[in-house]
Length: 331
Ligand SMILES: Cc1cc2nc3c(=O)[nH]c(=O)nc-3n(C[C@H](O)[C@H](O)[C@H](O)COP(=O)(O)O)c2cc1C
Image (cartoon, rainbow, N blue to C red; front, side, top):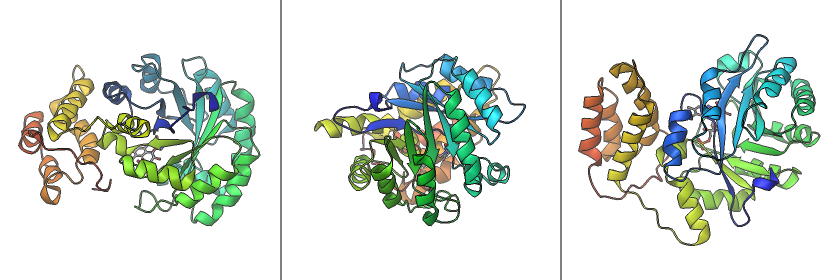
């Protein structure tokens, strides 16, 4: 992964987010410069699985020309090996293993964050999948299941394997998406791992990007919700690091961004109501802090048609006022 690291600033990576960071979203993001590296949503891997066609499409139709890493989630070693071999036939630069998804249905199957209860399984997956991956092999992890105190042992485990990068989302599985991020754990990883470490959790503006890099010493930033909220964020971080911040979007620019999301997610046969549902997935992340007392989201939520939805956008966003995206990410 070192070959992808820029000289004078952190590597910028779009976090994998199921049902969000799909081909449509990648297309929109690439209009704004986008990140340096894109991670796919996770491929669900089990004994009888085949790689999901809609995720393969994002790889095959890569709209941004930037490197893609394909993420897998699962705990069946042979199935992970088989899938890794298959995915490597596509235009990707690496495979990522998801050790951290907190969804109860995933953890109950001992996949994602559930693997933290079975370190021997993590060990076997890393050993066997590494043997099948000739491209980069990266890991995305949380810092434990119940407590951050589990992290030093987890790190020891990761250190034993020649992975190419480790992304640390600085929360335990139990902490889900609570506001606190344990940046000290990410700092420990950046200090002790022989490979590049990428910091993940709550980066939503230039100030938090600077702060996270300063406190963790990480080689890169993986950004999720902050990039849905503010698609200019990657470009703004690049500009901030080069000493000249030029990109300062207005609320009218946010209105235009929502229009792009609408255009890219349009599909033949997609009913208005379903399209509204898809748009609300994005808007739920864009909305926090917009309007007095979250007024924007409160008005968007009950809308049932695109006409109503865009009427709310027009009411709140047809103005040249600056867009200030630094509010907390939680609604
Ligand atoms: C809607 C949603 C879907 C997600 N899907 C995935 C996923 O498929 N794989 C994964 O590793 N993490 C997934 N995550 C976690 C994010 O990649 C990221 O670790 C988390 O949101 C923290 O980063 P942020 O504060 O920058 O959003 C998801 C998060 C959200 C909010």
